[in-house]
Image (cartoon, rainbow, N blue to C red; front, side):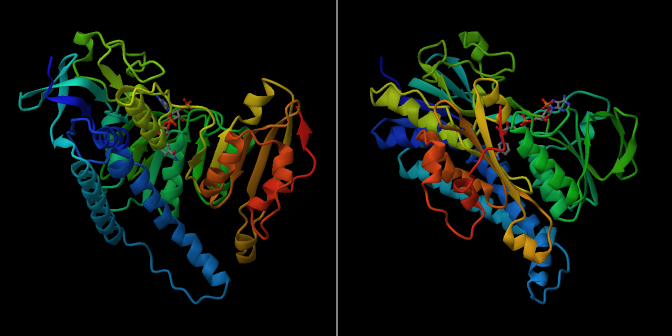
Length: 451
Ligand code: NDP
């Protein structure tokens, strides 16, 4: 049977675009459909604009530090319109780069929503049908807002980049990556920022000591963090939003942003009729090779809800191409993924938390906590943390957790050593780079505890 294409990709985000390009570069006939903007969540409404907003928000502190170093600096405030115009231009440029990459590698793209008509056929929004030997679903995810009275007044991270003006006050709900990152951004931009998290401590799942320090420093920098607190109801009051919290507190905010998790974009794709199985959270179920129960249909990235990070989706896309087009079955490696949370202070982490590791074996915990030179000179009190979790039996470093300016950059490099199976002694025989913060990673002599 002959098909229009060897591969049809649904979704033009990080994972889909990479898979399409790599398959086409290997000679496959490839098409891709995207209903929204090319680049997906990461480029258009996630990592990229978020990081640019983190940079923007950090200048307030830097101006103060600069003054402490002797610079004569005047801070006349932040111009949201100026930033937003530049941000939009940058996103347009990046979207153009993504479109260009697809075109340049010979992928035919359709600016349309697509759904599955049968295991080898995709139907586009205009009713036209395309057949393909393999279909790859890479449709990502979208923010989820729980149902409660007044939920329609909430915005999500999607809207944060398009606000007409910066609010004077904001409530951020949630304690995950997105909520905690935006709390830092808004606070740094001068917005009165309150964060509600229903649990005991933000950033659940990460090392307790590390997330404790992040939370402490966020509070120090002016964020009103309320733990064990959720929104009970909201209503409009003039141009403000009146929020009643589960603890009975009542407050007015200009904006309320919910960052309470994301749902996979797998509805209305025609999956049910074809028998493609979905999990309890709506994610598409796939095997270790990203294949669904229907042999011609594969799925990668956030829509499969494995590890929802851009570089992971990209790897899943490349492993898919290797498996399906290069005859080399490759399963994406989800072990020891380094990651950064762009809170202020930033956190970088790889491997197991102290709590996870201690539940498995006897571990030695090494920590160094101090005030870094640059900020300390300026009179800023923020503390940093360097932490290694070491297996007592094998001496391997099982986890590395860093809370510090630039922690994301540091953990990328420490991640290589941890992924290679480095032992504490390997760290120790590496000469320190002085004077830096990360030198502490190779100079920690005795464990602070053995558990
Ligand atoms: P997360 O799953 O990280 O966090 C969701 C948060 O919302 C949790 O604190 C959760 O609480 C809370 N929550 C869930 N449901 C409710 C509810 N009904 N009421 C109140 N609170 C609720 O999701 P995010 O949206 O922050 O991020 C999504 C994913 O995007 C992340 O998991 C990550 O993979 C990725 N991401 C990565 C970034 C990075 O690499 N720097 C940056 C941004 C996103 P509880 O803990 O109690 O469940």
